Amino acid sequence: MRRHLGTISLILTAASLVVVAAALPVMNVDRSVGAASPSPGQEPGWRLASPVSYQNLTIFPVFSSREADTSGFETLDEALANGDAIVSEQGGYLRRTRDGQIPLGFSVGPQVNQLVLVNRGKRPLLLLAGEVVSGGKQDRIIGKDRIVPIGGAPLPLDVFCVEHGRWTGASDQFSAANLMVHPSVREEAAVAQDQKQVWAAVRGEADTVGLAAGTPAAAAPPAISREAVGGAISSAGTQSYQQIYKYSPVGTSVESATEELSRRFDRVTSGLKGERVIGVVAAFGDEVAWSDVFASSELFSAYWPKLLRSYVVEAMTRPGVRETASLDDARDFMRPIGGHIEQESEPGVYEWRKQSVGQLSEIQLTALAPKPLTLHTLRVLHGDDYDRGVIVR
Image (cartoon, rainbow, N blue to C red; front, side, top):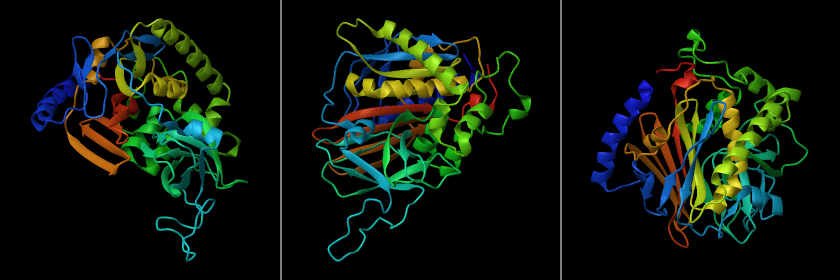
């Protein structure tokens, strides 16, 4: 067990007492079987299953014996593809008031960190931090998990730029990219909420602490260097994140690893009786560092292809180690946490809740209508030793 994981385990144990005392359970896991008891808005009955590994990436499926009905929600990719949603630059889709004034919160011209979204469909839209929308003056990523209700006015949408060098485009409109940025970038959007850090993560810039020591002798060099990822993104005179999948050898390597992991994952999760896959926990080497869990297998299936690709990109830019995370490590990672809580909500629509302790953060997005239901839970170990180029054992 790595030293800092033991430290986190002690922190989580103490934090769990705080959670119980405050009567605010987030994800109450029974470590012996991996089962979870319900938290407000979340269905109970999930467990962690045996892992699927390839190279330095290990995926732990999350199985559930209960299935929430999430058919009343639409994903952003789906809505953009079928025309139920329109995303445009500021000024590209504005409705003026009767007296000719721009509604409060809007500007006339394009803005780097704000777009306009219109939900023209018949279902609320589910948006996750790190989803890529392509087009406009430059590609953007969604800045925060949220739900967009139906029939509302054009919505000012907070986003982050992933192209530091381009500000041109023939159209102000955006389309579905069917991409999720890899965890190092997604973390800066979802947790840090900082544009400069998003740009730095896109370029593959690591924390400077510990870099002088280089990659430890016990670890193999990354399959794809951070510099190669940055070069792929900045190819053709732009820094479009999508270029990472079109650039050789990065794109070929990513797709090859994704296909192999997908085959292995399908073998492990096929033929389930009375259970469905609703999420995953991801480990890079022996470091359990990420999880995405959804309210239903339907939502998980919609996001899984681009989530898996994002995990592969992350894994291939980290040092290769022989050790792999165990099921007990994954269970420790998913234990309940206490710590600092931040909450935001749109009455009658959704609640966003972030809880952090030490290096661990958890973000829950709960729909409030037609009844409370936690649609997505993200958990991330941030600022970890891999980001600093150091492995502590």
